[in-house]
Length: 295
Image (cartoon, rainbow, N blue to C red; front, side, top):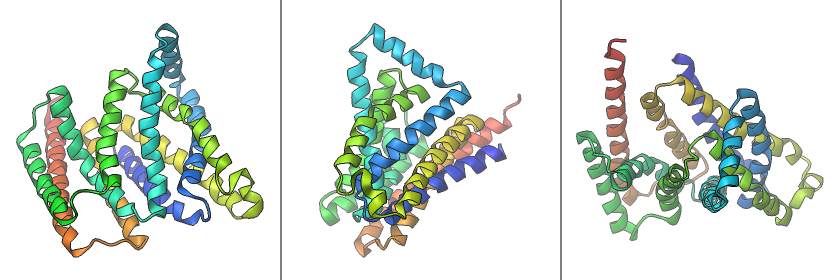
């Protein structure tokens, strides 16, 4: 289990490193960086899936598409929902939205809890209800201060639950579905790079990027593979608990990039952070109960 914990934390660190890494890829824009990330990550992910024996999941989905062609429309929607999230992750650090995106990731566990309640009729536990109330206090303050959350925050905390619902409805919530989502982004990724200000000739104009851009692919693919391996080595509850490491690191990156929490925003962040702590405590209690059960 210690290996799984180490890998999960390593994945969170790699995602945070990638978040900061975009600031080093000047003069590339956010969409160009997103394009390069997809073009470099998909081949690496393909190799991993072939080696690990997961490629059969992709074949299964293609068989389903052959039998039900209209399934392809749903898969395109799924790819678009994920693509927007991956683009935002690359774009935000370059455009002063790092803090907003990190807040979205802090809110995500809470919106996932509410999604489970609304979409699937899952009952909220006592601690989950407390977490929702605390988060609502933060939401009320943000609405009072500035009239609402930024579009970037809302895109993360609402967009991801919607993406997971679509994947579940399509029965594509596995590695095969994730690979297909990313593969469907490749034409758009190619167009983003080709039509960007730098284009594929970026290495001639900025030779140092010939090292930095491939390294982006290495970081992205490594983070994804390590994340997948960790998910297989850990109990689901502990894996979910460790997922809270990433937004903390993203917040650190946002502050490192020069963004700051304004005085009036502390009453937004503190209740939301407390809500996350409550959910972490619940996850820890669940994990302890599982470990005490007789085998």
